[in-house]
Structures are given as structure tokens and as C-alpha cells.
Image 1 (cartoon, rainbow, N blue to C red):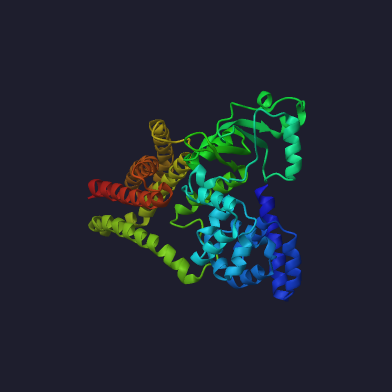
Image 2: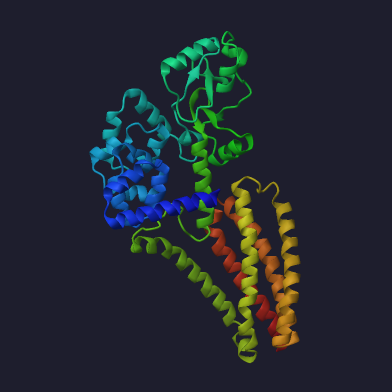
Length: 450
């Protein structure tokens, strides 16, 4: 399925690019009109800045706000900079409270004030409620647009109320049951509302065992709950049990995607919100810090090599074989590091089971170390000298075992000290495997050959 979606996107992108090159902006508008805002957002992120501005100008004003909620932060910021106050205020109209809270922080102060002034008291209060909580909690993720009912009314009364209301918020699979003080009591699934006798009271049909999410629940826990319980939506309550809003599956999917991109790109020192077609100087500045840090670790590895300069001068074959030791350790360590970071992200790895993960990865590192040490030793013995083959075999085993240890311990230690394992883990691992690999190989060669 992802491959099919990617293929469709590439086909749209190709068609859009050809249409832009032909100068037929009317055809561009027609094409965009048939697409979902999320699909338009994906196309915008795939275009260079000049073409992106052309496409943005062709988007219907009714869709601009929805498109802004789907693009990455960097792209959204660039688009906002091109819009005047009137267009920005118009784009925010009709947005869900949680979506509006996401983009409001990137708007100029004057626009924020005008947006707030254009809202009625109830909507403004809802927005302020969402924005008062951290982004990475249930309060920051929730939408205050909910449908509530009382437990002492019949299902027929509820049906009449829904018909009068006319429409339901998106992704509504259940109604939320509250008392007169808006305290959460349970949920009334729409399936039960439609299939049960209309004369029954809500209290006799409602589900009381569906737990609401405390407003300070971290996003990582929310994604796990939605995954394990197959939730479509979940109510959010304050510390007194009063209903505040609900979280829906579409927002959770966005969080899972962002978390995945963060882990994948963070290991290279990149930001998941970085614009693919950002100006060269901006992208260069973002990446320069991590390149500089990597340079420091490279100098450290070079310093270790310099300690054995005499050995390398006498046995030139060592210089040829050194990269093999470091590379094997680096790859093995990266495999472990990736698995551990992924396990931590989905809640499968933590300090409670760290010892078991450590033991398992240590065994994997040792077995693979012995296996590939035999292969490398055989090739080296035939290529150069059997004794050098034995030395590089021992160095590979040592480095791959240490790589496994580092791959488990580095992300756990970074997490313990409040750092992001995805951002710092890769650089630290490379340093460990390079330094240990060179030290083991050249150190053993010095002891055994000189």
C-alpha cells in the first residue's frame, strides 16, 4: 500500500510539473480542486520554492487553512510569510481547534490578535484551553469539538438531538456521556445508538469501562493506547474528571508519523520538519553543527591511529585493513542502536527489561563477530599473512561485541539524562566503534608483530 501511494504521488507530481511548465495555471487549479488538502500539502513539499509559490497561488482560499495544517513546519512558515493578514485570518476560519492551535503559534502577533478577536467567546475559550497545555500531551493534542449527552435520557431523545444538530464532528464513533457538571461518565457508541431500542435510556446502553485520558498524558502513551486498543477516538478529562475534549485517530497517526521521521532523521542530525527545498544556506546551517561534531569525533579516531604510527610504518598492510574493523563494528552497532531506539519509541524497551535486551544483543554481536572474523581472517591470511589474519579476527570480535554494548547502552543513558537518543546516539556510536576498532586492531598488532 505505501508503494502504491508513493507511485500515485509521483504521477501527480509529474503531471503537475508538466502543467506548470506549460503555463496552464487554470489546469493547475482544476487539478488541485480534485485533491484532498493532505495530498496538496504533499505536492507542495515536493516542489522547489518557485513552483511551490505558483501552486500555492492557485489553491482555493477555502482550502488554504486545511493545507497549512498538513504541511511541515518549515514549509508552513514560508507560506505564511507570503500571506497578508486578511488572507491569514480567512484561512483560519472553520479550522478544528487542535489544528488552529498548531498553526497559530507560527502566525505574526498582529494576526493572532485579529484571529482571536474574530472568534466568538466560546471558540476563543476552547482555543485558549488547548493552547494552555504542552503540545506533547493529551491537552495539546485534543479537540474540544465534542458531542455530549446525559445518561438519564432515552436513545430517541439523543437521535432527535443529533438530527437537530445536523452534523457530527469528523471521526465521531461515539458520543460522550457526562453529568450536569460535565464530569465524564462513559461513552455511547454510535453502533449501539442505532441498533438498540429507542426507548432505552442512555444509562442502560452506555459503556462505563472506557477510561478517559488524563489531560497530562504524554503523546507516546496515547499512541500506544490507540494502537493496542484499536481506538478511533478517546475522551480527555482534567484532574477532577471533567470532560475537556477528545483525541481522534487522525491526530494520533500524525504523531506516529512525526515520531518515526524524527527517529529516522534525528540519527543523521536532521530535523523532520526541514524543508526538502529550503534555501541552500538555511539547509547548510542546519547541518553544519552535526558535521562539526562528527569532525571532532573523526579527529579523536585519527589521534588513536597516530598513537600507532610506528606500527603502521613498519607493516603497511595494517593501513589497508583498518577500515574493515571500524566498518564492521559501525554497521553492527547501528543495527542494535536502530532496534533499541525503535523499541524505546514504541514502549518495548526500557530500564525494566534493559538487561534482557543487553544480554540478547551481546550474544548476537559475539556470534556475528566470530562468524565474520573467520571470513575476514581467511581472506586476510591469503592476501597478506596468516598472523595478521588472526589479529584482525580478534579485533573484529572485540569491536562487534563493544558495538552491541554501545548500541544498547547509549540510547538508554541518553534517555536517562533527558537527551534525545535519536539525535545523539549515532554520533556517539560512531566514535565508540571507530576508537575501539582502531585501538584493538593496532594495539594487538603492536603487541604481536613488533
